[in-house]
Length: 310
Image 1 (cartoon, one colour):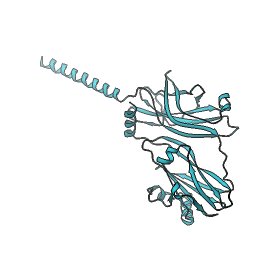
Image 2 (tube, rainbow, N blue to C red):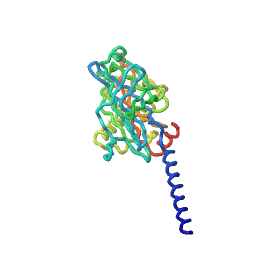
Image 3 (spheres, helix red, strand yellow):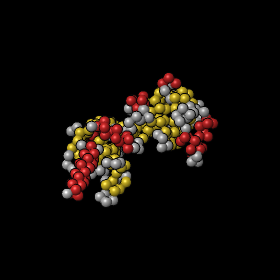
Image 4 (cartoon, rainbow, N blue to C red):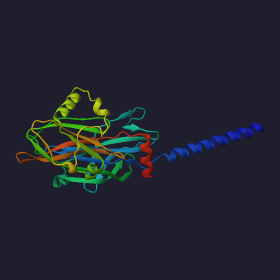
């Protein structure tokens, strides 16, 4: 009798444990994919047949749906390209960027055809909200940030500056070395996404010829540890802000613009910042500093993201 009582107690404890584990598992699941924020500018030339961009999204491990297509309003569709990047989970052929306790971070590369009538009639367009068609047959309307697509911008830089090197490190810093071919004055920097330039991107410019040339040589010979270990305050140069402009650089003198992205809640960025000014002879110019940042998430950030989304 006592043994039977213990047996039933054991069965009840197993049942309670199973229910508890199930409820905990369910509490960690998301009802639908969670899409990250993307801020892209995709420029294209007249002869280009298409443009491509990637969307990043979080899915449950037990139901790893993928994107089949994306609709923007009633204007056009973007279809998934036949590409699979990331890590393969060979047992059931799931390709993912990162994996977490209960979720995969997925990516889908989408293609927009430029020869469609809608795009040809409106060559410059942007969108923030899309309707996503998923592999399980469901649809979802989501805000993905903002993606801008337009013909390549005309830039007057060929005879003004020689861009020598653009390099980045894993702490979201990027250096851009250049030499003016005549004396120039930088009057402004412009971003297609003002909120980034104001809140999430810092810029410095170093116009000390000898120091910049030494830094360039270090990068070119792969001795870049000094740069990677420096904090923003330790980096040489002056903030590239409106308060410090105009900034003059003599002909033939090396200069370096350093950028860093600060993202309280990471997003995917890929766009140019335009450096605008005029030469000593009075000709205007602009040249791009390309920003590209793809965050690497940790479990704490993913937990916070899911909590915000619920």
